[in-house]
Length: 341
Ligand code: 13P
View 1 (cartoon, rainbow, N blue to C red):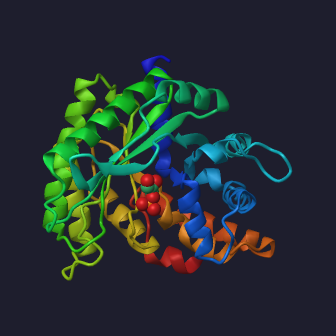
View 2: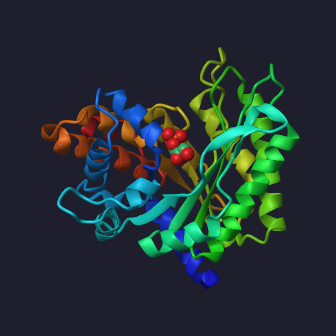
């Protein structure tokens, strides 16, 4: 595919305040989410849940793309309409998670390496045939002072794999979402999160350059610079926004069209407020938006709870959360907008 086509897709993913619905939970993660609302983890229930999400009326006004899992991209509605068509009809680009998850990193067992490079070229070609326009690969970076992680080795091998994936994806005509996630699990401070995020982004962009990835044709999906969930000293919303933008400005070239954050364990309102504050700090070299999983789905999932009688209400909740993040992606979100709903 021509570079211009990749760039056009990447721009479409981040323009106009629209963001990405990350609904690419592996079957085991999806089953955990279903179990949290007392729904059995079966193929039928995963299908029913995703059908509820993707057929949300007018979702495409706020959502530009949806990331699917291998099982999901081959599924459709109960009435037999492929999910890829449901999404295209909503003007939502279908995307696909292509990594195979994490394993203990040989030589440094307290951190992980993301697998899935073997045969990736062929799998990407198949996903493109199935209608995917973009892809995602998540590298996990684990801050832990006790274990002295991440090591430079752990960051390097993960960045190297991300770049291998990104180049293969572009060669297959799919925009790669490049996701180096510094976890917010544990007790580390915002200072530690910043230092590790800097090391990670520095290494990732070196590898993307070395492996000839076209930066105009990617979307970066990073963590925000934020204290870990169990850190006794939590930073203010303003500090998170400022430090995140400052860090990104230092390490992310302006050629990248957009940055779509993961939510990483932040609650829904917090993830929206951080996004809004960052967008008020413009002008910025890139679009700043969202590719949230939990922070878009949580309330919708609990409203649905597996009951068809709740579908319409759960869809209203998803549309509302998506709209709030759409507003935050242009810095126009206010707390009153939550109440108006
Ligand atoms: P969260 O927003 O729940 O962190 O999920 C986003 C995602 O796709 C992680 O890979």
